[in-house]
Image 1 (cartoon, one colour):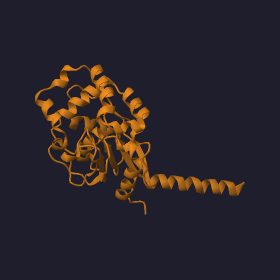
Image 2 (image 1 turned 45 degrees about the vertical axis):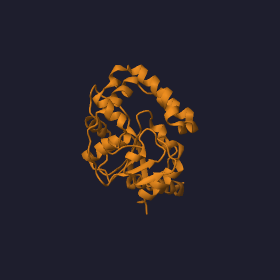
Image 3 (image 1 turned 60 degrees about the vertical axis):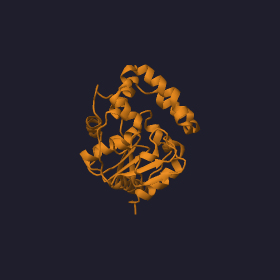
Image 4 (image 1 turned 90 degrees about the horizontal axis):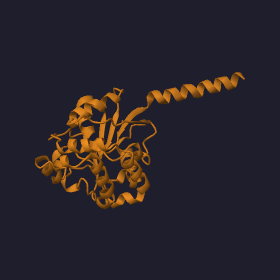
Length: 238
């Protein structure tokens, strides 16, 4: 009985030490997704995965102000930040506030110049304001498989994520992206991008790692390749 107790105590202490030594890695999903987008990614064993949860933006809230609100969910002094699409844009803003050890963005943009011209056009001609939240959500559901057909490899997952989205959240984040004013970014931010991304075309992007034929949905559809890159970047466990 005494030996069993001692063994249990050793295992408990080992578990607590592993937890104490782990590196928090905060994940921020895209506009039309949630934590499901990260389910197929793997991280080095010394990282403890945590998820940033979206809240509804205030009307006319800027990207930087929204990022500041989301940053309140980060409770660790030392941490890593990984963001996809809108989550990557927000990561660039959070990096200015909390100074993560490492910031990695996937299928995203580091500043407004990396976004396609249709966003600039809508800033000057705000057609999006004429479209209701419900119509915007319907449009997203119709256009997603057309613009990014790679999503059909994980059709049920992407459909479910979009179905769960609040139309007001989608409407206000569209406005947030269109009116994003960021012009420069930290050069230490690591950018992973696909060369078949139709949402944020690679021609506008200064990337560090390129996924051949990778789409805007590649965090889920090409998870193995992205996990290998993340392992290379995050090799801090030894």
